[in-house]
Length: 75
Image (cartoon, one colour):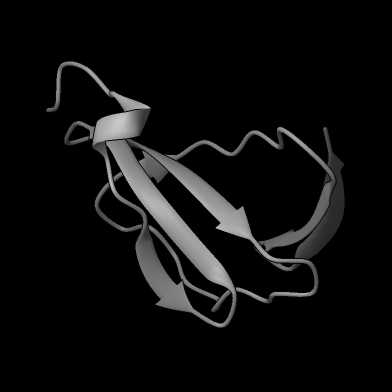
């Protein structure tokens, strides 16, 4: 686990397709990631077997599908 997340000291990791992330911290049960999507960018469907991940939309809106249920999250 990373004890502190310092934004200015953590570089963006480019994931391609207009998506980048900064891994903020993690445990065996939970992962916290800062993710930026350019307008219109689409993420790759995936699942988290090792740990859970929580999403918070800070700006704009984001369409997500979890277990077949589609929902639009907004800031």
